[in-house]
Image (cartoon, rainbow, N blue to C red):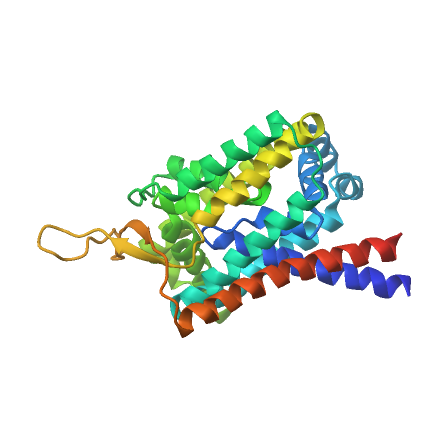
Length: 339
């Protein structure tokens, strides 16, 4: 019975990683919210901050078992396995759904964030002037970010490293979407679509025994960009986790209130009824970036007319709320079983 439960926990941990990876890739949605609602956020932050000087000493002294135990290797390994698999599977499905069923996808995410706000705030009891101010400031920052104009694409490696550091904020800070920040920085398509696809194509070529891509300058540049972006992400993940672990320990109520504020503010990013506006040249044609893609200028949000499509979208909002409540129920059941 114990081994069956153990296997079940491992499978669910990979599934949680899949959900976090998919959420991190969707602009406006934060993987940290998944960690929060599924009940493993604090363990995630605690495990990441164990990647420190002591961990590196254990690793470089060849004490791999001690290193694995010290950093909570089973937990992090299964979680990151789910995230990696997500980048090459779930995220591709999500990309297809956003292209073909954009309104319903955003409606589901909007509902999930509404459910997350309820879930996180329902047990929060420490209401005072400081925490209320923190919620308001978090919401204002989140809403303000959603109305900024995106920048031009930039593949300078120093800037790409910086993008990596910023992008992991969505994993460590619930409600703060790293992928949306990448859109504002102009590098979402470059770092989360083009470079990932270049790696996917290269792996596929290697399995076919075709190494011609090594001579392809564009492909190699994309792989170099992805490598630097990954290094930046790892550096950001470890750095943010140490900072967050400290502030969660010493300023938990204010931190939680700020996180709720961020999540409330992120509703502006995932508002389902919006139109993407592209930059237009003087001759009336669309401005394109270096890869030939249309450059996003901003997003126009609007209130919908009440018709069949709108009612279906509202149903998907309800579905999103139910998904979060289902995750909460699963989290409670798991705790009761373990107790």
